[in-house]
Image (cartoon, rainbow, N blue to C red; front, side, top):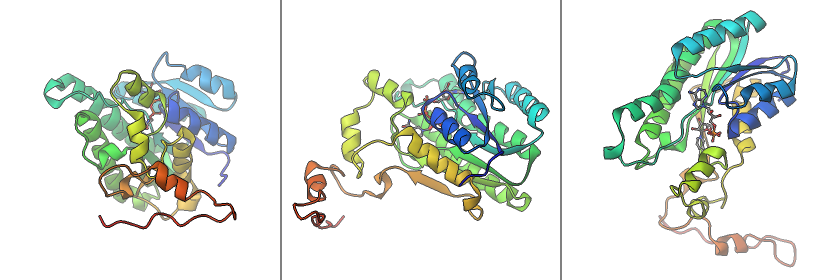
Length: 278
Ligand SMILES: NC(=O)c1ccc[n+]([C@@H]2O[C@H](COP(=O)([O-])OP(=O)(O)OC[C@H]3O[C@@H](n4cnc5c(N)ncnc54)[C@H](O)[C@@H]3O)[C@@H](O)[C@H]2O)c1
């Protein structure tokens, strides 16, 4: 999957999934432009990778920051091959009647309007063969009580992905999205710390019985950005351990189902549990 030498912009680069993606992209021989908020450690991140990688501080909720960012990138590289819109503010888990207008607007500014402006600025400078990958969420696909702003922003990002894919297909720019389920990153750890999420219950709800690792999401992003997916545009790839495929009451992953799939003494796998009607 190596396509060395591409200039790849990654927003939210200092976060859980962002850091994993930075490592994978750099290891592939591509040039990382790591973007994140001032003071969050992004400068040290690409500094550690060395030349020719670049770190830039930018608040993606501010149009003037984004315009300045692209000016810097253009001056240094004169091209953009891949944009990954990964930066986001996580869900507040507040009841809708307790969510103020400003808080709602702040989330949309970062999670939806930021990616829209980033995509426009990048597309102006992209050549045929370029790709944009938006990091959405299952929250943008399924109903999510108490995640109103976050879920709306991610649903909007998915709609934007499909619209831009159609609009820019004739220019040879592909636009896709990944929709992760739960990922073990600082965003989720923070929700757990604040007592806003029961991670044991989450694991039981995932058919694979665990949350994703950040690198598993990063690899899906890399795949969609690669030439291997040259005929894929407008698609939303769920990366969720089976969450979206489960349609029964109760737990999707039980000790019993896990045990029955363990190898028996002959080394062969036991029969999986018989499917139940939904
Ligand atoms: N962790 C999960 O379970 C999960 C699930 C589904 C989707 N996602 C999505 O994956 C992406 C990465 O999330 P993560 O879990 O790594 O979260 P994270 O909080 O670890 O990382 C998010 C990064 O975005 C940066 N950021 C926030 N606001 C910004 C702004 N205005 N300008 C620039 N950067 C900004 C933060 O500083 C942070 O480094 C997000 O889009 C998130 O919505 C995460």
